[in-house]
Structure formats: C-alpha cells, structure tokens
Image (cartoon, rainbow, N blue to C red; front, side):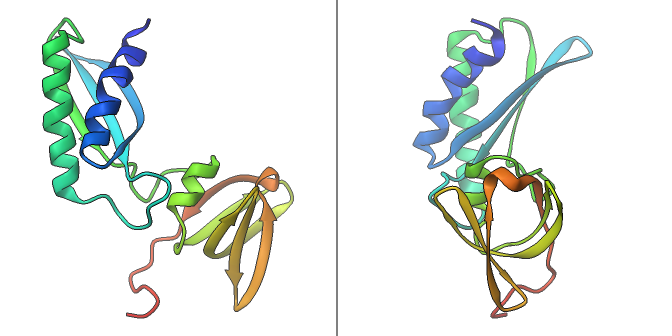
Length: 154
C-alpha cells in the first residue's frame, strides 16, 4: 500500500468522527520534511460550508492517528483544509456539494452559467435566468463555482 492510500485509510474515520469526509490527500517533499495535505469536506448530502471547528477537530484527530501509526515515518507537516471555491467540479459528488451555488459549466458543446438547484440522478438541474435547465452529467466537461459577493435572499 502506498503512503497516500495509507494516510487516507487512517484519516477517513477521523474526519468522519468530525462530521467530514476525506476528499483527497497529497504528499510532497518540503525540504527535510514532507508536506501532507488532507482535503476534507462536508458529506455530499450536506449543503453549505464546512465549519472551521469541525476542520480543526478533524486536523487534531488525523494528526493523532498519523502519529500513532507512525505514518509517514519521516518528519512531516500536516495541513488539513477544505477544497475551496476554486475547486474544479468534475464528479457527481462535487456537484451535490455545490447545490444552491451559481456555477459556470464547460460542456462538450459550449458553456452555461446558472444556479444549481438539484442533482437528479445523472442530470444537473439549473436555474438559468428563471428557467429550469437540465444538463446530463455526461455533457459536462467541468464546472466552477462563481463567487458571489451577495447571495440570493440577502
């Protein structure tokens, strides 16, 4: 088992105990140490942003689990973070987490911008200028969250 897989195996239950899921792990050399970046997020059933207290709790738990297992076995710096709004959305679970957000989509043919209202099976349901538009996930190359300074209802 490679180091990334082992870290995921150790980090996943600790993140879950904090109400989060492990989105990914990246291990890179950083001078004499390794940099271990564990990206966590809310489960795909949740809407909103991960609470900073939950991220801090996950960080403490993950650090303790890695230290106890001596993984990695060399000095390392642990960073636990969320994906952020600049994450490229490519998988169904990414879109599930982005419900209620304004998205810019690259499609196999063209582009589209609208507010994601739901993920229905293998289709994205968007509000595009007041009209419902359904887009099959198979036609989506990728998507990005459009950062809004003022959200609906505010």
